[in-house]
Length: 395
Image (cartoon, helix red, strand yellow):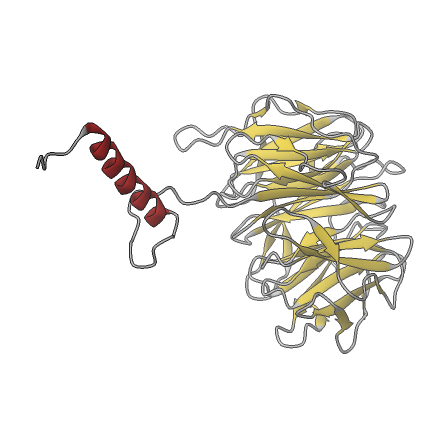
């Protein structure tokens, strides 16, 4: 009998071996390990509030392109008609949305596979205050903080395991000496909370320490801290990743400030001290702003100029210096900005344009310049009055 392998038998054996290797890489065999497998890419999603809806986009992490999910209405979910607060908890379980006219907060569970949203049981949750705008969560995802614009207060909620919100003891907390808190910023340490007082005569920022156990707020000595702007003034704030500096846009049209104020942050007390040369001039009616993950650059959306101002940040002093080419042309009425977690892309909502612009950020290791360049296909989407936005990277 001929015992040599035929060509067909050899092909069969090769196919069996290849299948076994692929099965091991796919996790089909618990006892085998895969050393050459490419780890699956974790999805990334962009959410934006628009008129009566929340829009979802898939983010291509290699080139920044935004695409709508497949399926009828797969990328749109019912939302408030005036939502300027949008935030996900650090564990990426829930998405929180403020409802200004209803004095409510809506909470959605987030599907980490496809980004789809489902409103949690009990949502929307009412406030014992009026006019919620900016939202932030604490670093542990235990508490949600809400700026109550019309009540001059800050509401604080416990976040339940299902996403349900319950008021912490003492909430809402009155903003002493401030006026019309519009937006909030959590210090990277998680120890301090800042509120921009849009209608403060001195353009002040209120500062609070946070009780890590209860979520209660205590106003910091010296708060509120003036910005040297006028009313209306302080709007959206941003911090460098290390929490050394705080920046706030000074917008408004009645008394056009058209500036950004800069502060150093006392890491022990949370107190703010104005940086030399602050505030600096930007475009007309600056609104959203963001700092790159490496802390090197600051970008500001100038609503009435249709531009993005860009500054380099001095690592020692926090002083801002306009970069070459700034300001950069944006679409119609840029409102909010967010930087992709990779630090490679800047996303901008265009409130009147009804879409989202995406720029690459020149931040190479050897010669980072902060230069903005629109990516191919930008702007993306067809929306009605998009406002706030957030990028969520699935861990």
